[in-house]
Image (cartoon, rainbow over the protein chains, first blue to last red):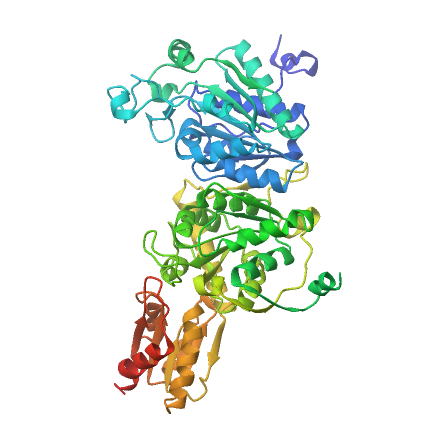
Amino acid sequence: MTTTEIINPENLVYIKPKVLNDNPMHYCPGCSHGVVHKLIAEVIEEMDYQEKTIGIAPVGCAVFAYKYLDIDWQQAAHGRAPALATATKRLLPDRLVFTYQGDGDLAAIGTAETLHACNRGENIAIIFINNGIYGMTGGQMAPTTLVGMKSSTSPNGRTVPLNGNPLDITKLLAQLDGTCYVTRQSVHNVANVRKAKKAIRKAFENSMLGKGTSIVEVVSTCNSGWKLSPADSNIWMVENMFPAYPLGDLKDL
Amino acid sequence: MSNSKKLDKEEVRLMKGNEAIAHAAIRCGCDGYFGYPITPQSEIMETLMEQEPWNTTGMVVLQAESETSSINMVYGAACCGKKSMTSSSSPGVSLMQEGISYIACAELPCVIVNVMRGGPGLGTIQPSQADYYQSVKGGGHGDYKLITLAPASVQEMADHTVLAFELAFKYCTPALILADGVIGQMMEKVILPPFQPRLTEDEIRKNTPWATLGKPANRKPNIITSLSLEAEEMEAINLRLQAKYREIEKNEVMFEEFSCEDAEYLVVAFGTSARVCQKAVEMARSEGIKAGLLRPITLFPFPTIALSNYADKVKGMLTVEMNAGQMVDDVRLAVNGRVPVEFYGRMGGIVPAPDEVLEALKTKIVKNN
């Protein structure tokens, strides 16, 4: 089969979603962000919501999420995405409003905004990338960094007396009356990518049905920050992150 | 029935300055208010919640979990091209500075009200003007300015709410109403502004084509950000902001003069201090001292040219503020050493009395001439 034959429409088995543009991503090879971006783009396209979606980008590696998905975007200050999303959704109730946040943004500096948006039951979806590290600033300790895990600000490994406990914020958010769907997913293999996509779709649908706040945590790798190869990062995540942050639905009303 | 009909027309009403802001916001078609309680301005949100404008104009009112969150809700609303506002008092406005810097850089319109109280720290709930520097010199990080209005009456609290939105949208920049605990709490007669309908989504798409309302098929995504990793790009943004501030300085200066025509001595004061100084100027005149009052209504842009012109006419100036002497710096810059500029002020929530001001005028300015 020649190249020309391969690109014939009848041979097409997969196409990049139109919502995902052609800008080269700045993410490190092996990083989970690219996969999650693609899933969001697919869901927006399948729901036919490109014209009705407003994304709120965080501070952190995903600050440039707005470069890759062809929708309207607001770029929030560090941790404040749920506040922007709250106002946007209340002023434009028929729009799909979602935030995309990392663990530092959502579970450290933005804890108050996250918790109160969820507790008010804002009809927004929160996509939460948890890789247990601050990627953008060079691998510092995050609220979700595991005990014993090394980072540039816990070079000998996180200890509870010095650094406190890892924060399972998703478990906390599931306790709140305002949340309707709280789930933990990953995108390290095909089966989980498919499950994560379904979860994102459900979260977006919930927002439009006015059911309350939906949170999709994606336990993710940061091979640059973890100082591991992409393949080893996946193994390390399965062996270390999943026991602390087990996959599955924490709440589904 | 006849009462409620009358409210739609021009009618003199008696209310607090804080209440006037709330009523004016509803009437001028504000889309969203986001706030957090703090004395001495809590009546703004209390009045809005009591009025329930979501049932009449459709305005959203939300009590946030903090001032940090309030200003970021305003940021989100402003991204959507909506007329949005928040209000607070000094410590709360300090918490908002990060968000204000983002909004200024992203070039978005919004209104912020600061009903100042005495600081620093938690300070006091009594009135103060000690946030002058924070308001007109930037406040948060980076080079930016806020259009800053200084109301001196309950009527101006209402009028400036309307004006602040107009200026914020004209220049796509945050506008600040810098009041103090006296103006917020005192009751005076006020004529509320006429009702204006909220903008429709079609009007917003036309007036503010950058708004994030969802991307139609025929345009590129609207992306609102204050981030530029390239220094050249960031300098270009800074140059654009500075050009805008120069334009605002050229077009929007507002001030009021009282007994200035033949004045030999000029008192300069804003807000509540100006009310006190007006009385002090009357007292000085009755003693034969030719004093006048210049009251800046806009603190940024500052009436630099007007003050510079007075430097050629008067023998000296006295700046009176409820702080340790902040605006006096800008008066001195305008005068540039041509006449003496002295300062009198009280701090920590104390409002100076007219006779104190008169005494200061005599001892600091008149006696030395």
